[in-house]
Length: 178
Image (cartoon, rainbow, N blue to C red):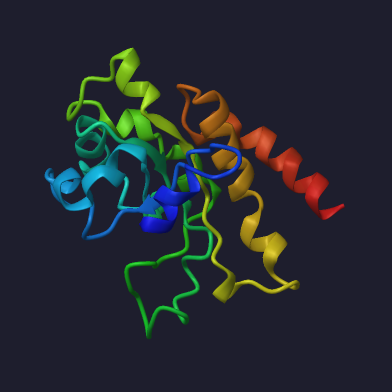
């Protein structure tokens, strides 16, 4: 934490915006008390499940948030073998339709009023692909077409479900394998 504060006083007078993944430091509505003065400069990457109220709670505390829901946008999940035996929190495999249907703003409706200011607090989203399950032989199959589905959802956030994107996804897949 001290190093981060010092970086803001360096030659370029830059003030870094560190990204903190959700953890025990951010799991209560009093996280700013735990984090002290650093809390004002943090961006929180939220990896909880897509149905939880974690994002509205963080935004209500004044944080900027990046969405990375494990139950839709963890692209390495579904292999099962690397987390433990059998089914676990990372199972089962989620196809591109699950990734596409994960609508961070939509999931918050009912729990949170999405006024224009609140929406600005969600800076973006990330499809996570952790290196412990990836090698040169499987990276393309793990990333596509789910990466394209996440990108379309985040860039345009269409009102339609995955069915409207089906033709586009099939075309992308043809391009990927040719």
